[in-house]
Length: 228
Image 1: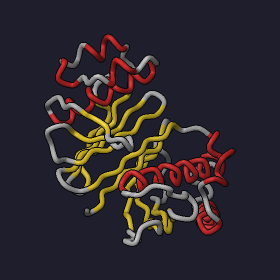
Image 2 (image 1 turned 30 degrees about the vertical axis):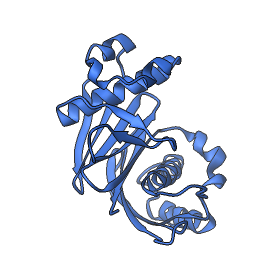
Image 3 (image 1 turned 30 degrees about the horizontal axis):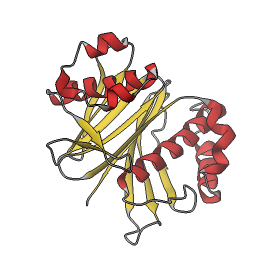
Image 4 (image 1 turned 135 degrees about the vertical axis):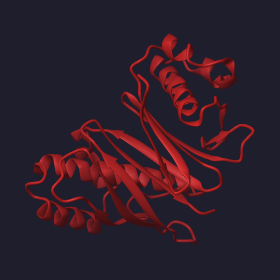
């Protein structure tokens, strides 16, 4: 499938690709310029699909093929470029964000209520109180199950995006990453865009972060940028 979404955010270019192709079909879209030795190390068909889909997405939104490598920490970087990049993938989708000089984060999560089983691992008491307030405010806009599943996935995704922008390890999702407010459009069913405010307390900078999000029936996507 061609590019699903492309947009710009704070100087970054972002995109989402819905993966419906086979490995051979994706490989035919690329030359050897995009392929690193990592590809041959992946034995899982799903990892090979993700690898190729990310490169096809980059070629689609940038108009050129790019070689991506990874630091020992696993953080991706673009060969022969100072631009910052963030990559995410979930069931059937890949997402990327590129900025010429700011740190970026993007995350995409497949819509599933399985997140309810682990919500106590990444949502703190203050955040749960915020979700309950939103649940009362938006009662009737979405079903309660749909709304709270969306909020839990949004929280998880936002914290993944925050983590990707931070130069830090040993980050605790509850004690170090905090969702402080979520703005949602009234009178809207899915899909919709919104924003949230968050902060991190893991580093001396204690960065405040403003994160945008997109929620649809299939996935939740969050993205942001941070001055270095």
